[in-house]
Image (cartoon, rainbow, N blue to C red):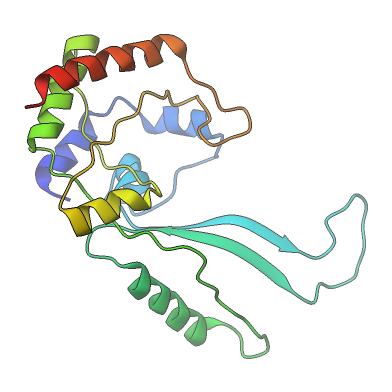
Length: 200
């Protein structure tokens, strides 16, 4: 990240206390030299998306499981590739997994990293549109996502994508109870109208 990007992250109106309340965790964790929003939006990550092993029903059972499975994902950043990251994970497991177990690492999905220049004409046109509707200068931040077409468009066509969202922090994105705050959504539609007029 550049110094300018770091300053943008510092502008974000979210405190550590608010993040703890929103997520329900007892404390925030991660690289201390980065803000929590930088750790979740601009740094490489490794997440456990699902675990499966052993007896998980009600009551107790003292049978030891013979196998376990974890679904994991990694958010990549510019200059990282899915192929390199997969090799690094495999090398880590070879070095650190106990010799008493058998393990297998399966690559299920690849989408590289892409980033759009915040000084581009498209981004500036969108920033102007957002300011016209909300009356405030928008915040620029990096945000992880799995949109493979964005990477492909940048790599093969040379076209940057403009990514903006109109969801609120408590919209529970991708959850069973996901929602959209309609007044914000309508403002987003208005912002896109301004954007199409601004973008030349």
